[in-house]
Length: 61
Image 1 (cartoon, rainbow, N blue to C red):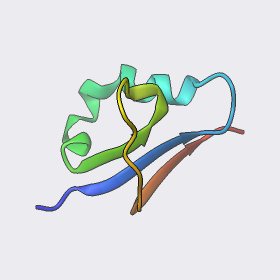
Image 2: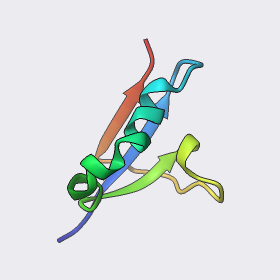
Image 3: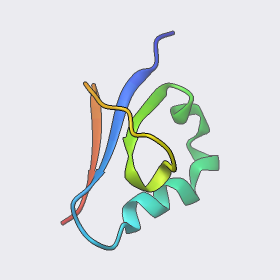
């Protein structure tokens, strides 16, 4: 099964939504297994992969 390319973007300063996504990762392991997170500034420590993305989670108000 091909993984869905996912980008997680933040447009506000608090990063609360991204934090909650990673904090509750044990509850979304099945979903995480189906996606390839190509971009998530908060969740990466190395180089950043680029899109294209099929799905984007956009955090910010």
